[in-house]
Length: 333
Image 1: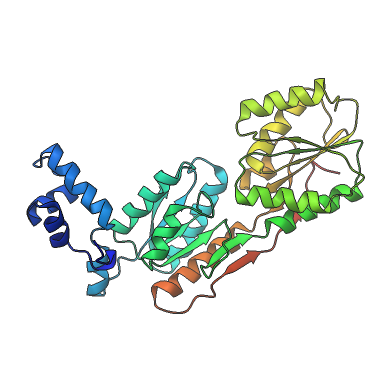
Image 2: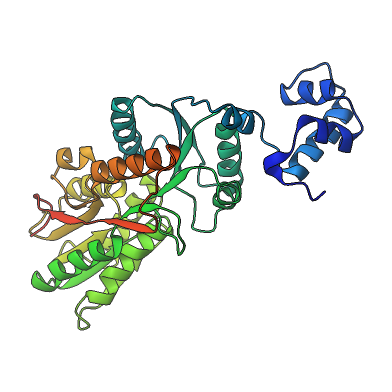
């Protein structure tokens, strides 16, 4: 069917599926009064036509829900918890409330979350996508739905607000270049765009005479414990002064704990720099030297640009970078 998804109606779905509009309405409301086989048939047509209920009728009526959808990768991750808190604080002051969804780093879950938010009549969406080619982004672009991307940059006109992760990596490299150690390590987690840019900024700017030893795909606290064992048993960091760049605070805090438990002196023997400056980084066993992500700035900018789009104003568009800065605490020289 060539009809635009933007003009698809319940009647169109009913005609294509060969059922009544009442049956379609019942499927959309997940009524148990529809036989499973019929429900599956209607749902397939809904998916084929790309129909999302409520949103277009709401827009035609000129109504505003004063609700903003926010999609992040994890809710239990302190970084995203602070993102959500900052967005909510700003939007509440502007008369909006938020609906929260999370993708669990899964494209399909992310797409479902976006569809559900649109169905729930949100006025716009702030999304930290799983990656820069996420199907959820395609959906939002094709529907011309008001949205802003955070924590990711795209190569198009879409408004994206992100920390300048490459520059943040360079700042850490410059610090290592001026505080050289016998050994230098990178410990990295998820291979998402932000972390990859941090590592690139670091590797591009580290003194070429410095040999780097990398531990990759370290995602959980148990892996941090294993990494510490390897650092001691294989690389003898208890005997050789070492610099460590770990790509986010969530992993850096347990790293410090395990190193201290093994009797290593921080920063005298092991100097550690991380990234994000989450709230708890200052309260780690050894307060953490880290790159400030500029979470409040990022969230305020993204939220204000989204409100412009919702109100029909022109957004800046393109990539908007929040500048990083080094927060020096006691975990580094």
